[in-house]
Length: 256
Image (cartoon, rainbow, N blue to C red; front, side, top):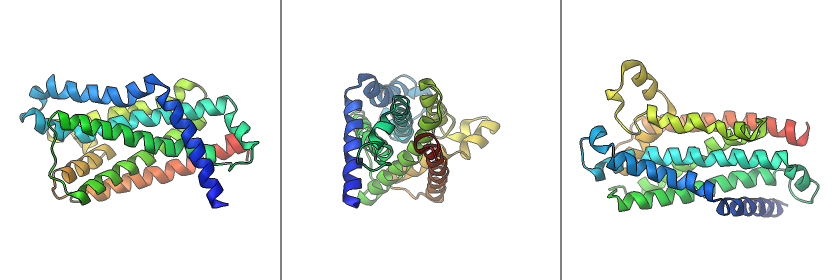
């Protein structure tokens, strides 16, 4: 029985991935736009925002660019979920001999895979721009694990938005604050340079802890307490978003 469930999820994920590769605007927004931001920050604003070389600034801002890419990517999960719900795709698949939750989990798996692909592309571009890391294999595995945890947490937020939204614009609008948060964090400039009220917010929001952790791992430095704060934020967001999303799923799709 379990094998059939996994097969159903894989089939639904394959369906969603095909939609992504057929959508040029999705690829541009999720991958090209963060790369454009990275190029702009390094070669246009880099001199004013960072006193080091272009290569050192690429290393500094890469974690924030990756988080912005993930935030853009999960917006399409919410969008695709909303489209499936509004067109009755869920009900249609539920009338077939497949697992009831396979369509939902297919979208979640698609989010993990597509965001992993876009992150790899961004890192490759950063390497061309001069990014180098002294991190060992364990550090890289830790970075990958944290990024996947972030994707999972934000994907459940996307699921909640996609199942709760009344319009297609509302389904993806939830990602706007997520894309903006790195700007008010340590992602692009040190928080010490910010006015006190902004600095207090920046130092106590999840992006800063996640960015600082990834940056320390890539530089082969001690992560300190940042990693536990980052993991706590990811776990808390995942649990709350999962519970609310499953409630929305039961109410809207299963009619419970």
